[in-house]
Image (cartoon, rainbow, N blue to C red; front, side, top):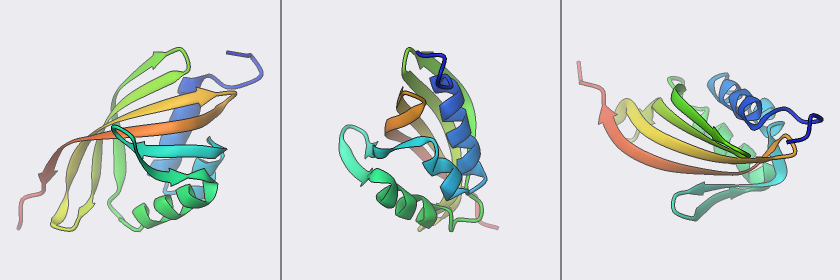
Amino acid sequence: MSQLYPSPEIVVQRQLDAYNARDVDAILTTYAPDARQFEFPGKLVASGHDEIRVRMAQRFLENNLHAKLVRREVIGHLVIDYEDITRTFPEGTGQLEMIAIYEVKDGLIHSASVIAGARTLDASL
């Protein structure tokens, strides 16, 4: 990795911080203009800044949205985050286990793939 660019870990942390701040513009500064987002194993859900902006803006309407980093692995230009996500589902609020795999080149995320795990709904009052 060139010294001209931040490490992949720093780039992904900036993306996570922007996600938790619900700051679409800050998120886009971490993605390459032609970046792609996938649901594992290969379902394309957004391609390019315009589609990522729309996807994130919609997600940020959830006022309880928060990603808690559980563990991070860095292997060269790949960053693998294990996260617990708090969000609002159609059935109500709850948590979701998530693995996110980021490919970072030249200081920008070029692809992001997510694997959704177990979903737990909050108990009703």
